Length: 371
Image (cartoon, rainbow, N blue to C red; front, top):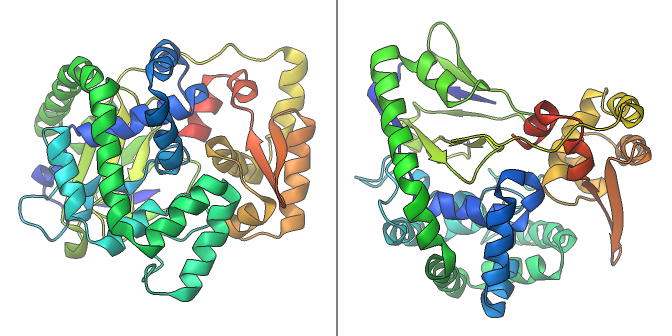
């Protein structure tokens, strides 16, 4: 994944903290505790303390943070034409939510519905195109009834959904996030200040390496490369996207290194501060069988999607431009190695990576497929 920074003034690369982005990552940790072994205690205690109504509403909206870190959680990046919004999240959750309210419906709905690897983010006119609506609802159906219902409501009338979502975030703040943010915000702010000083005195290459070894920049300082098991590119120098790049530290994000690279949005990178260790490695007997299964590069790429949520064979085939039989052969190898599970939901057969099994292969592989 690459970010074009040709001719970008160094001062246009900024480090900022974001309460809404951190709330999204905290919600992801609650939804997928297997991704975050270092947060097991917090996730268990927080989930147990949720009132049933709030827990139910979080389940309804979890497609925004379970499979991916929805760009609606970074509204500052979508307000590329608004003065004062260039790369600056709110200083409070309320200010971030006010920025979210300023996104137009088309931009909000398109970002909210980017919940599956097979929906092309650049598709235009999601609210006005009958074919886009049909395709979106078909994809939503594979995620389950609650996602199907949410997608239908978003497409029919996004206004009430937006009001409902803001209230959900406010209730999360009251229930648990305000305390969590008070705890982590000083560390995140200190990290942002430190990286800003490092950028100022040591340059882009040193600052990016301090953010993550997965980030690098070429010698001419024209392109940032993010080493992830996915492909994509964006530009930090296109006036339509708002010139610049924002890097956001996160306490809840490890092991994810997330890149916002949507067309028309300001590029942004979320990076973890602190890195707890994952689970112990697998036995030698299992290791050989599983490493042989993962030796094929396509199977490694499939693991990236299957780590985030269940997917059907046809979704994976569409995402990677290969045939369904090819996907089935790769899935069979992974399943034989005990690395994925399969279940049926109605007429759909869904496959998902066994995070616990993969974690036993060691931290480097787990971090790579989840990065």
